Amino acid sequence: MKSQFTDRVCAGIGEALHRARQGGTAGDDTAAVQAAVELLDAYQTITELMRTASEEQRPPEDTAEGRIARITAVLAGDRRLLMAALYSPLAVVAAVNKHHEGALDRRQQWGAWCWTVEAAWRCVARRDGLEPTGFTSAELDILAPVAARQRFLAFAEAYRTCDATPADCPADAASRVFGPRTSHLFVARSIEARWIWKDVLDHAESHPALGQATAGELEQEVNLLLFDRGRPGAVLGMSTTRLDLLSQGKRSRMLSNGDRGTVREVVERHLLPRFQIVDTLRLALTTAQHPGCSRITASAVVLAGAAALVLVTAGLCRKEICGLSVFTLAASAAGACYLIGAVGSVVHGREWALPWLLRMPAASAIGLFMLTAMHPSWWRAAFPEHWLETVAPGSAPPGAAPSPVWAAFLLASAAYVYLLVTARNHGLERKSALWRAALVWLVGGCHALLISLLGLVWIVPVFSEEGALLYQGWTTYSGPAVITLAQATAWCLTAGVFSQILWDDQPITAPLAHIRWHKDR
Image (cartoon, rainbow, N blue to C red; front, top):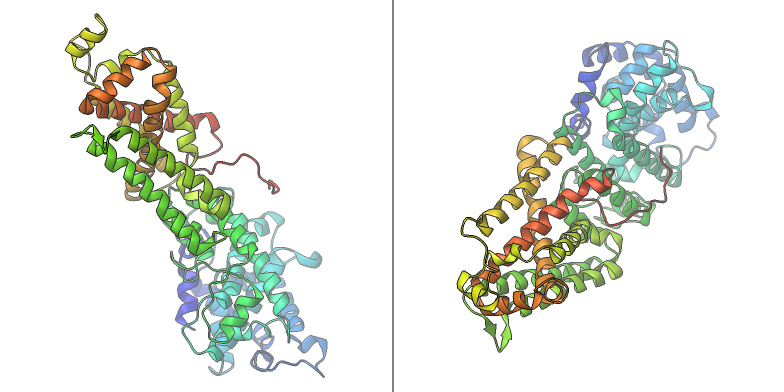
């Protein structure tokens, strides 16, 4: 058995499925299959069918579909064999290869794998009124996710980059696995298998068969669904064009609209709720409508945001640059950051906007509105008492007032703890939760900083009580101005994070969208 096939089946939740299995082991499966002469005989013509492009002059029972129907009938009539095909399909392939005295090459082994999982799926899905012997309807419903996974993995193998020669790659045989010149049928069944398996993963907690899977195993399974090599990297696409290129030994990263839709769905349902921001960014840039230009736009957004941060830092030691206020320049950079981001969202599409967590600046803006309406005492504590007494006698806060820096720290810490608890409640393991929550906190903090800059420079001085006094102090004392900005940033961050409870059905990392055009299952 080819090690690539075995590694694929065992990866992700492969071991978890066996842990959740009720009765039977892999050893039992192997013994049952090796003794099933009728089942092995059903694969008798696979070497010829996978080699030739014609089924002319063959009776219907000797075509690929005829052989799959025969395998389906055998599995449906024997509980042990169907369980073996569901949990150990590669044991069936190994037994078929042994039955052929080891003559099956990589493509033919893959073909036997596809026949096995397709037959098992037809049994469990009860296609054409089929009722497998020895199973209740409830049992078959429980086993459906197992069959869906095995079917997806087998079919997806043809679309993965193959390091072997083109003649030894599954893609070269995909047009024959269900009969001659049937690549359209194989692609259709592959896409169906991917959507069925994705739907199972979308509702993993509803399936007892997946109940033993850990958070890490589920994440690896999502990687198998998304990525070419089963780990973060090139996206796995499914199309006739991709098959044709792979069969010629060419590497293909072409994605169809269906592939992009799948990626978007998986990102929204799995990666973002698990705070996988880095993987989301990688996928967003790959699947954007203009990948090359999207990277340039993303870089411009980051540079504008970084410029705002650098200018704020410069504000600690100087008030002006080239005759302009440092904070006005920083606010201009913040505005440019959001303007470029808006253009990128319009030009590059919905996928490009996913990693920027756009609900956070929207929620931070709510925090800014609250700051605007607050009593001016929130910012007075950051400025020198003698200046406050000079410009507004009696406005200085009492000496026992808490430090504004300490207040900002407490607010920022509360936001991080909220994110950390959310990550753990989403099933993340401890280490992953710690750093992923920190990354979301950092992205949210950047949004809160930029929103606070825009607000304190151009909005709060106009709309808040004693706004003119704040602007005077803002332009006179750089150090206190930065402390005031830190207060506003911490408040907006915390308000943005905690406002997630207002849309409890969506995580804080959810995209800025409210309508979905798909059926709720």
